[in-house]
Length: 69
Image (cartoon, rainbow, N blue to C red; front, side, top):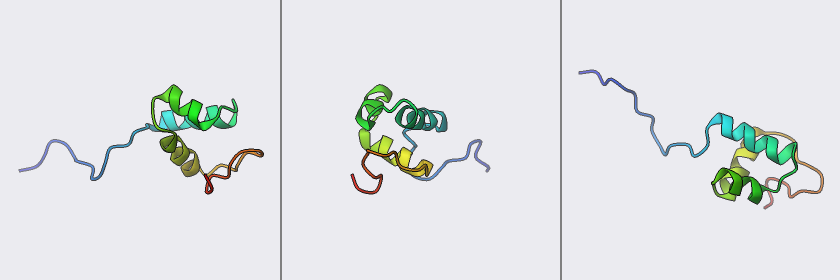
């Protein structure tokens, strides 16, 4: 008997790819602090930090390095 849907293992993602690109844009282009981006998107600041770090973009001058929070 074949299942009609495929299950993905693990915890569901909190942010969609579109939301991740929005968070990255707000952080890099608009210069919003991570906590403000998180508040606007209704997720934790650590979720935003992980999304930005996973995007693999260069760090902004004057901001905390992504690996040293």
